[in-house]
Amino acid sequence: MAGGFAMFVIEGLVVVALVALAWVVSAVVLAIL
Amino acid sequence: MLVKPTRKDFKVIGYYLGRVFLIVAAAGSLTLLWAALSREWHPFGSFLLMIGVFTFLGVLGTRLATRHPKLDWSHGMVVVALTWLVVPLIGAIPFLLSGHFGTPLDAIFDSVSGLTTTGLAVISDLDHLASSLNFWRHLLQFLGGLGIIVAALTVFAGPGGITLYFGEGRGERFLPSVTSISRFIWTVAAVHLAVIVTALTLVGWLVLGFEVHRAAFHGITMFLAGFSTGGFAPQSTSIGYYHSAVFEAVAAISMVAGVMSFGLHHSLWRGPRRDAIANLETRTILSTFGFTLLLTLTGLAATAAFTEITGLTRQGFFQIFSAHTTTGWATISSTELSGWGGLAFGGIAIAMALGGMGSATAGGVKALRVGLTIKAVVNQVKQALLPERAVVATTYYQSGKRHLTHDTVMAVMTISLLYVALYLLGAGVGMAYGIPLQQALFESVSASATIGLSVGVTDPSMPALLQIVYMLQMWAGRLEFLALFSLIGFVYAAVRGK
Figure 1 (cartoon, chains in turn red, orange):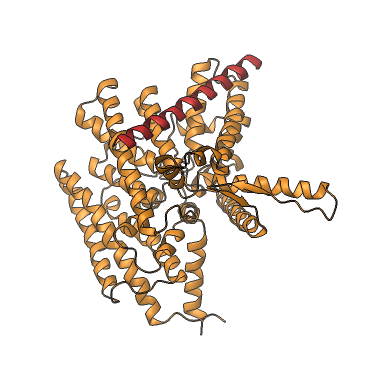
Figure 2 (cartoon, rainbow over the protein chains, first blue to last red; figure 1 turned 30 degrees about the vertical axis):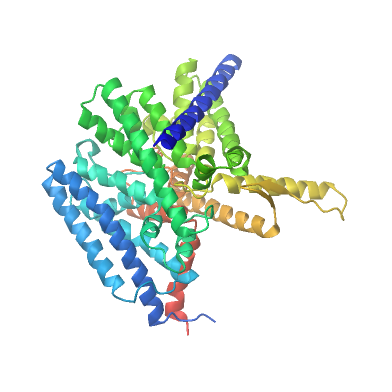
């Protein structure tokens, strides 16, 4: 179960990183267009 | 010369099919429990009938042969293909008796869509479906995502069991025995089930204000659909029903877990963790995600559909993430999605076509093949630019350093071309019914790559032939053709062989 929670945290961090990427891309394209 | 299958071949196939049906009957029994607890007696009766048919066929099959007869490659492929053909037919019985489907074909369509983890649906009035039937829709996705055969192999392997494992669209052998692989897959699923269902239930209860049992229902069903990258949802408005960024974030975690190959899960759990980042497949899917995200967000920004960063990020990210993981949940309606023109539409279509990872719960071309195709093209360009006698050796990292051989390239190109042909088949039939090219291609890719996003083509009024073509696409797409061709070859040999 502890391993599962650790995986949940890792997978959560992946989601956070990808959302952050989307946020930056959105900011850039909105600024340019 | 084709060799006609003997009576013994049929007995071996029947025996293993029987074993698989008994496992499905056991898994399906969970629906009885759910229906009884919910006091839904009409669905209870239909589940009883379905389980009875699975059990009857299972017992019949297992009596055809002695314990664990040897299973060769062609037997295994035929067992897998028939399993994926017959299970959705019998699994459609509760849907057929529910009164929520106009025709038997509609019920079978949703059953095939569920088992292949696609997520396209033609059900009517989903919002008033009995909770046990809704649970069965999602359980079908979970069984299909992890693999019915994998479920069966956990209980029995027998000689030649690895054939069944490969036949179900899996090419990765990260543990020595097929039993250990199957058990690892189920351990990963069980642990994620415990953690993510708890998280989704807490969000439903504490953030959305649902009653606990209702929050648990949504937590369980959404996990089963998310982890299998299936894309069914208990409500007709998909994940948009919750109107909650927090719920979407936790659901996205289930999609991350679902899209990861089980080899990657194994690297993260038991090492070497370096593989998780170094593998070509991981790098490819991250790159294609970034590329399609850029296309889509640029397209949406250009049409002025979104003028604020928050709205653009949330809608653009979720749709692309759902498409690229081959899940198919949407925070917007199919009408809104069909209104995404130009770059945005292209971006999401490419994300669907190239998404998913191998040996996971996903369908479609899958990232490793995309990565290897790019490597092969670069290799060809290098070869053309260098002197004639120069030899270009290309390597890649995928759980160890490997050489890109001619055989690997041929295998990758063949399967990739078959997927392109499959995409075009559904688009062609759709266009024959007067559906515009853009919509026809989108829906066809969605069915073939087992995504489930829809621009409105899939609905209860769609033509029966188009439904059948989409079912064929989902089936072939999920099994990656090999089992399908083996079944065709087996039937041909039975008719024309000597």
